[in-house]
Length: 251
Ligand code: 1GP
Picture 1 (tube, helix red, strand yellow):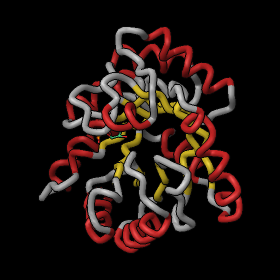
Picture 2 (cartoon, rainbow, N blue to C red; picture 1 turned 30 degrees about the vertical axis):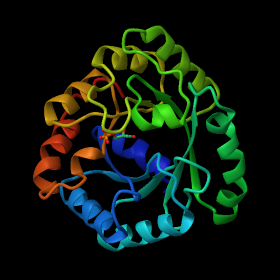
Picture 3 (tube, helix red, strand yellow; picture 1 turned 60 degrees about the horizontal axis):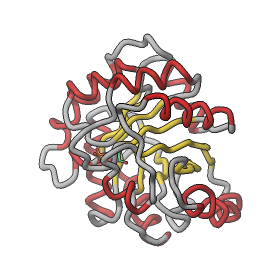
């Protein structure tokens, strides 16, 4: 089964939690231990990537190590065209739709496409939207940051993503953000599209994760909270549980 079909199948049962691991922040063995603990805590998929440029060799090392310790499927969340690996199960083939730069709209994708085709990696087309404060991805990705107070723009971008054939929309506040995308805005976007909606950035506890899932996020992503954390299982379990038990009112 393709990873995208697997996501859709699992979404019939409950909302999903994904754990983002940035391979630039620790060595491959530590990335693998994060994945192992996150899997035990019930996370549904591992996303690997980030805004710091790293090469294919480092991606390979991290993914091979993760797959030895964790049964979950690994999806690349690339920050550039060099962040690809044949060891991944899939890649979000994403366009940062509110970027001012053609690099992040389509040029990285053009550079990566022949390699991905050769490696036969499943590509999942994704519309990626970055909100204030945006953090590193907002700055590096040259984003015209979207605003929680402007749901109309977020809805228009999300509709455009779906109409262009993208299979997922991702609303991002930026890794490590002090705030999240607001539940009110998530609810507007969810009503406007019929493809799965991912939300991430700044989610640090079960209550925030539950609010975001209840508002309409089909998939909730956390990353920073497990970095450098001694008890990943205890930290993550309540968040995963909050997402899994959120009402299935929207999908
Ligand atoms: C970043 O949405 C993800 O791309 C996760 O954000 O690191 O703040 O959890 P955090």
